[in-house]
Amino acid sequence: MAGVETRNAERESLFLMADVRLEGAAQTERIKVRNLSSGGMMGEGDIAVSRGSRIVVALRNVGEIDGSVAWVQGNRFGVSFASEIDPKAPRTSVTKSNADLTSPRYTRPPMTYEDPARLRKL
Image (cartoon, rainbow, N blue to C red; front, side, top):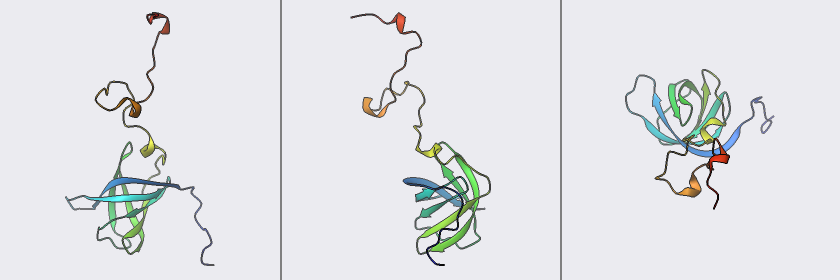
């Protein structure tokens, strides 16, 4: 039954970076996250992990998540999270306000006004 999908969780295909640390280690390694679900992820990178290794993954807008390595194939590996996450959170913008005026305008969220009636008409 090779090629038959046996996982129940819907995965988000994406490409983002995350920091991974082996449990008990001080040093983190930067990896690529290839897909992400509420219960786990597939990572790719030059980190020496083996099946069953306990790791901590730091994802943007999620924080640190404990997990264990479920499988390893070359420089790719699967991680099963100890608790579920919102898989859409790492894709959302880091800034929720318009206070970041140093980044280019096209990268910022649209400006919102609490009382449009107070705007000056030109």
